[in-house]
Image 1 (cartoon, one colour):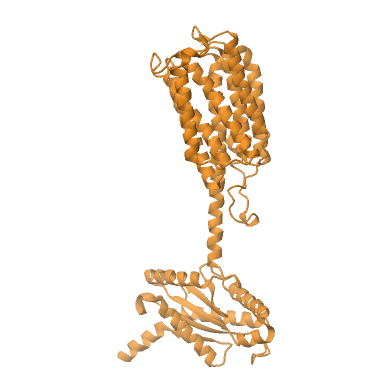
Image 2 (cartoon, one colour):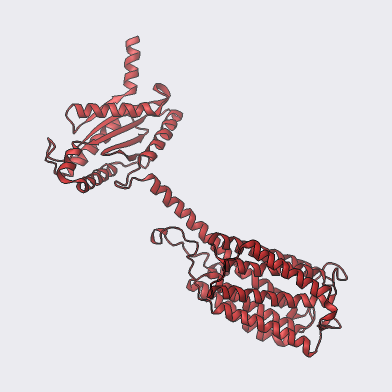
Length: 481
């Protein structure tokens, strides 16, 4: 059953790729065909079930002790949670419609409290406030008030209404609940009687009031159906209102507590709120999933150089410190390559900056394709200078990779009349370090690789030069010996 509900609400549908929709949009939540199909299936089942059960609605059933208290508690919690979620949704999206709908559910979560206290047998053998007649009038105020609040919500979609805040909406609801409580308890004697011998009175006024409540709920149903909105909450509010109509219908025909229709009406009133609550929870899950994907996308963009697609300088600096600490902890070598495009200023002066940018992209792609291990990272260090971090790699391995990169760039055969080689080339400086033995600063490795690059430039370009901390330390130790 739960699996069917999840499938129908679309919870199990695969998440849409955010690269096709841009930034996270809390308002973008179109109703899919699965949700429509499932919602209309529920509506059809409710209507067919109500028609089938109506002749049997008054059949007495076995009383369930404590059911009313459990029902009232569950009903209050579900509607209060739903109201809070809708209030938050309205505040975040700055939409009065969601706040007004939250006010409708906040109202019924409040009105259920005095109704339960006035219900003989719910908590105490006798009503705590009012009388059994009060309980019936609370039922009237509950359903009529909810329908009126929903109509106001639906109308707010069609006309420009001054923005309403959560505190104002809550104040209006609390005021309405207090008035309804006073009328149903203090002034109940002045109201038409709805009960006779513990059952709904078989008189014209009682029936007329019950039918009026049903008609108001139908009006609310039609008002919501006319709202043109792609949001799932409209669809599931519609389902909830159908369930509310069915509940009122069965309550009218059951006449007494613990009849078949009475039990089904209680289930219907819970369904009225539960379907929208599940829809909102699905919406929250969708937004959370999209937010997680968006955060990953933003993190990736923040770490990438926009021109070359390599890691940017900031990400490289972070990785250098991380890998330095890991190498020191695991007693492993760490190597770094510094690469520079030879005579790049002359290339820009000859062909222009757009061609220079394209040249950098092609050189960066060649460098990236040379790397085979996931842990190896190439970054744009600045201008036409690149840096390649090689964890768990000694200087010999770094020299091999540096030479492969030099050959890969030369193989591109990008014409460069200002270069002594006639095409674009790179100079590479390679350095390695055993952090545990020779240094406690990651910047030392960077300085060593930069020194090796300077040597490559100084000795003719288009070559790989080396500088090793390990060899320097060994040479120093040998001199001391």
